[in-house]
Length: 98
Image (cartoon, rainbow, N blue to C red; front, side, top):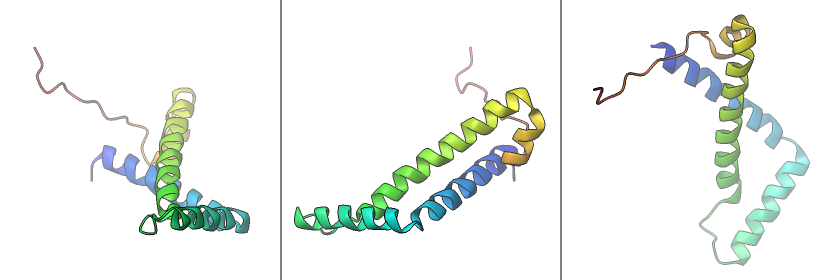
């Protein structure tokens, strides 16, 4: 497994865990149920509000976590290594280099 994969996997895992913990809060579950009811009343019964909202929030939390780890890693490289599993950032070569 390469460094990029490890860093992405760790950030995604932490993001999903954070979202799962937040979704376990009863007030958040009530909001999801209410939005789901609004979709059903509007005739969009096949759309699951919790699934849509959870996907968007999960992606946002993953992005925030990874960017926070990189920001902290600029100051303290060991923090980035702990948060993402590696302090080495991937470098990309341009596909059509001159």
